[in-house]
Length: 138
Image 1 (cartoon, one colour):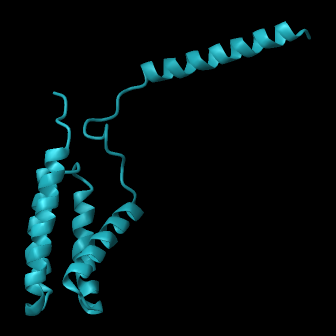
Image 2 (cartoon, rainbow, N blue to C red):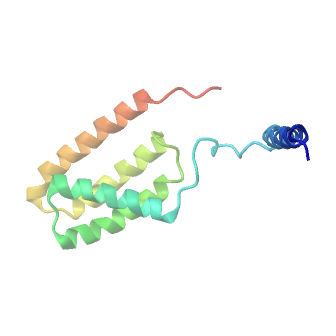
Image 3 (tube, helix red, strand yellow):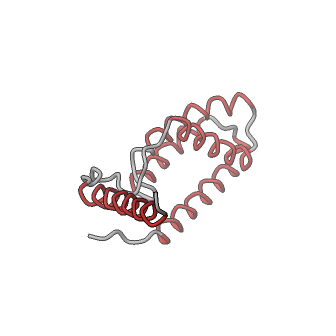
């Protein structure tokens, strides 16, 4: 085969591939509402998020092992519910606020001041993240 014929065949294959990609993008159905910018979270992601939150809480409040075990159940349950709502949403914040009294009940009296500072810090972090989020298009 001549080199010109090989190049022509290769170019035609590239054009056919490109046309297929573009056709697929134009004809694909849009994702369901509410999932366009939020991939489904895997169970390991929820577990990792809960462990990260528990690690931060342990650092601020200095939890012992039995407290960590009891709070892990609460934090994991809240994380599983939070996955259902978009980041920075009011629903996520309400879930956190509802969990605060349950977490507070697991702490000793000498840990409550540190816990209150942790809740205050988390509140400020949430408010800052909400302010920094782009406004969604109507």
